[in-house]
Length: 221
Image (cartoon, rainbow, N blue to C red; front, side, top):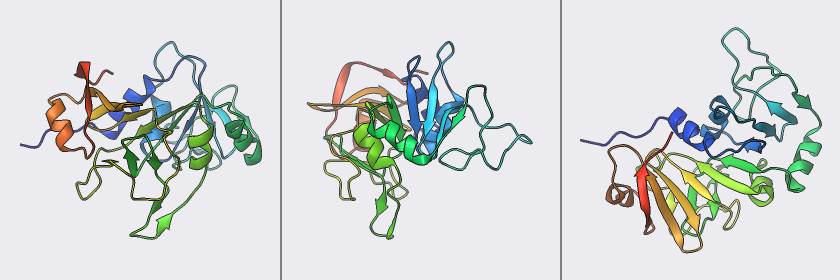
């Protein structure tokens, strides 16, 4: 029987635990955009978008959608006190000036060295640079939130990226539907596994050899 994998919302919830009080955080397309729903209790996180908004809130409730207020994935956002709006050039200046504490990005591939590829699928000729390259280079911490394998069952964690790179050795932490993995100088360190999974199970789904933490545990929410 195939082991259960975490839902996208659970991945986002686990990523949100990494966000510290006062962090300025940029959320990418897909699973990362769900993180604004799960700010840990007692913490104040200021979300930023390269479209030109700072301090946006969770997703809008049904019936309260505003066509002019969406996140990177096109989801409608709720209005919150203290939101500010500005030119996209200013938003990118914040990234390039080193003012983003954390960015949460999706990925097509992450290498064992922490290289990130997330903007181009060569076999389909589909790609969009967007702000990911600026974020990979400019954010103080890069967290990847993604499914562990692609639709064909191939690991997205690879020894070396075969897709065009977004950034080299930029990824700090990877949260997938089966594991939490830290990118270290020694290699990829398996820290947490989904309930019912073992380190051996995760290794079978992963191309590079994983280091296993002495404190390995189930994913903490």
